[in-house]
Length: 432
Image 1 (tube, rainbow, N blue to C red):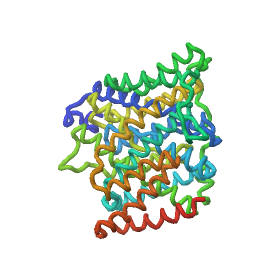
Image 2 (spheres, helix red, strand yellow):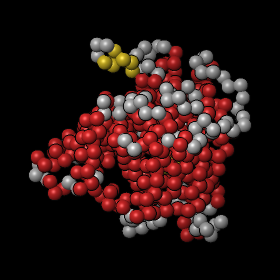
Image 3 (cartoon, rainbow, N blue to C red):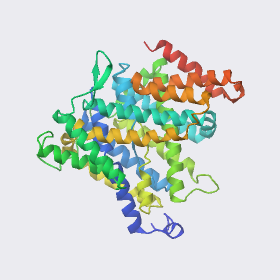
Image 4 (cartoon, helix red, strand yellow):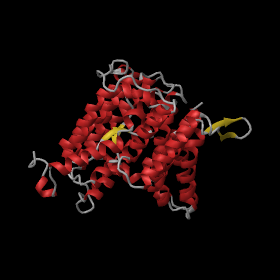
């Protein structure tokens, strides 16, 4: 085992890797409860089945990453993509969740093909960095807005469209408490701060009567039957213009989120060689395979988590850390009764703080260049205002070529960007 994971070469050991794996798990364990809550919210999906699908997709994807790619990187259904799945595709566009899962499945299969053929590098180079940064920040604002809305911190208003809600209402006040606790934990640098914030909020909520007290902690693994295989049964429903854009969005966000996470984690761990990522193909294959597995089980896109940097910070350097994280996700299957404790008041702080972290990419956008600022601004602002990640991406990708043409930089527009320009115009034209 030590030889396979190259402990001596990487200067690590079993104890360090085990602690790193545990640290990563604690940092991202919130997804086990946030994802089922988000996907079940108005989509008709069974929360218990999604919980099982989330845990299994995370366990399998992380295990593949650890054993095959040998990286200390964990995977799970991604924040932002689950919001897009639930609130834009299913609730916003009226697409049945089974068809949406089929879209996730197809995007995963396309990702596998792109990885095997090496096309991924060309696509990464074709899309301007400013749009990659803007998409990440926009998704962060969208997720935070959902968090604020779910607990009535922000409410609808006929005069001003939105307004501040009643902060003295029980569930809202508990969420505000959770936000304060979580930001304090994060500011203190506590690994797993988001997860611990959820735990403290849930406990306080039970004490004051805002959160139901669970009757048990452990239970048999719930059935995944309500969601299992639905993606395969509805794969024939994805051949429409609407679903084409949905699939492209799933693919786009996963593609660049994964690439960015892999580079960030590998750089922090000192695993980059000559500014290149060793075994990048295997890492991307693990990610894309996990998406296919997750869709088959019944969850939105599974992707690499930047929270893996917490494990690296604890000393993780090899794939053995990921093996430990995978085992912990598998063990989590037996804690499904805790789902009833995780109300919107408990999950909203996690959504909002993750939004804060994702918005950090705004600092790298060249706002002093107008041709860059316009598509970036429209991308970031349109997502929460239109309540749609896809619409934000579409608007940004339409304005980028326009601004480049005006500035006399037509040669900087790649054929792929022209293709997406046409696709997104069609998408907005036929959206309603």
